[in-house]
Length: 416
Picture 1 (cartoon, one colour):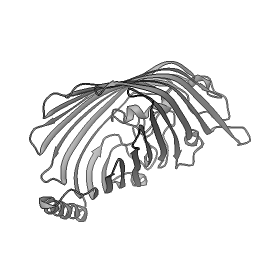
Picture 2 (spheres, rainbow, N blue to C red):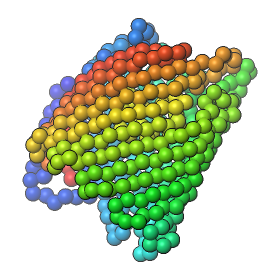
Picture 3 (cartoon, one colour):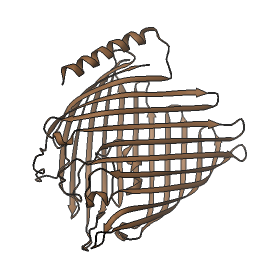
């Protein structure tokens, strides 16, 4: 760990401790985070596969992040935002050194009557992990995702309201490789539903959703021209949100619909998808969350938000995941966390070149275990360590067995 960075973190920790001793909480914050760790399979290569020339399978990684954000209420409105700028440095695979970021901003608003809504924009950039369909890439590949989402709720009568939501997402890659570029996509989605809230304990929403998207560089002709693959999805969704007690909550959605592609028709899907999450605050110091989801590839962000997948985006035809996370506060300043998740993927080819190929498919199952401990010596300072283990079992042409382990420690300090 570089001595100057360590010294900088220590100085900010001391400043944060002094600042937190008597200052009132501000809606704004700035901070610094430093982490250092080791990964046994930084490229996520399959067992027995060697990295490209000039790369190594294992590596030590140092990351420093600058943090900033705000969360401010103004009458009935709330505006918020956060920004994280990360510099990642690799000890052996220096070609993978990169600058990453994660940013979001939004507003929640409400009128005196029964009209309310929200608007959120977000963007992030990170190193894209490798997979079997892309092969062993001899270069750094950064994935950039941008999204905007909004919602509008209009109360009809006391217990009912109309819900309208929509959004757009764009995903792009930095590596100028036809196979990689074929995965770039953008999609627009909209949903119209009716929500029934009989009491403060829960609500039920029935809605109709539609998605339209395109892979603009999915394939190329023999003359080198790009061929776009457009897709569309329609579904009927039933969502349930319940708070049966003050210590537990249940959120669920079940959808029945179909997805159709113009070119890559192997990815066509008709059936049921959904998500189920149960949170339980067993005691003041113990919290448990159980999670299950079944989604199509472009909707895999619902799975990723629970950190059960070792990837930034999934391109499977269908993905199912189940997991559990437990957080336990040993003391007011020391906490432990543990999570275990298993996800299964049904795969078909998502990249096609100018020469037609026979249909390819595959299935895999990956188990992820994560353990962590953190210590907050002062209100605005956090120290901790994490370790993860991932193992994949596979069959078919599009995937292969693999495993990886990682360990890292970090220090974070904020001024607020």
